[in-house]
Image (cartoon, rainbow, N blue to C red):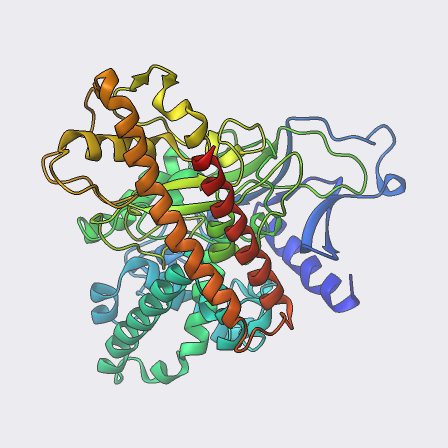
Length: 496
């Protein structure tokens, strides 16, 4: 790393350790050419004798709850930064005026609190942490697709991601406008309200979206009790997962969807989250966290990267949203949650869902309805449906067989009112081919429409069919290309 970066991350590690965090002595922060700032095992010559390989079960690093940053730190009575959760008097004032605290959603308050700590500079308790984050004046280092320049975002046209980008942009505009208005109305109590700019909000939005964690996943039983106590005055307005939490040091580790791990929240004397690696790592190897089973669409939107396709692993899926399920709260932190349930959606996979490389697809829950057997075997195992999530196939089967007198629903459409969520699908032999044919027609119509949209967007390109000219455009171009491969593979399976 450059000397300046070594100084910044060295200060972060020292600060975190002074407040109870841990970093395994055989690990270090370094700058990887691809993943940038990351954590790895030190080179062999730097390791103690006999420690050439870290065996499964080692604790890589930890973050005590006392140094996390979230909505909780803005609450009255939260105590001085670095203090034990819930261990302060109610005399500690809130970070913002009462009107702001009462009317602004918790996840937005958390973002404004991060903005406040950034504006405090070296006076902030979290300064050593914030100094290692991408800085607001360098949007190329932190901007997620929702905040890309228009010349870059155009490369996402025609994809699932473009729809979500529009939702995220609209949510961010609405949230910022509401929160800033609340601050302005109390300008006499909060004269510095104009310092809280849209640029800073976009930055805080992206930091939380890409780096935060859901409290219920990283808090011990003791910490959850303390959180519940802190949230008690806002009972009914804020639950434990209605906001998310930044964990200094912990959030440096990058994502690997195949890494085995556990987040240990119960073995330490104080509220703390510890990453325990269940894989072995050798000298010089990067040590990974695992953000969960997220598709490339979700990774692109929430973290700004995708997993490349290999023979052993792919992460390319099209999302088909159930209609009528309500809007998506795409502004919620991807790693941490905090803004409502996602509408039900289904996956269409680049490779058959039974293929070992379809890790995310294979992990999807089974359909809730009784499985339908045909003369060729279970409906969802028919070769023509190999690339489709079984729940999508059965959702269509239920809609198309329950009321044959009604026009077939489009693929992924919400079942009609009154349709059961778990029914036994019984089809007479003579109707079997007709039902399978109707399902295939509905799926093919959806896929052909989406592929046409993709082709038209690709033809338009970056204004006039231009080739990608920067990293954002190359990333979006590759993502869009893989989206097309998914749709074609699924269409080919229907024609088999």
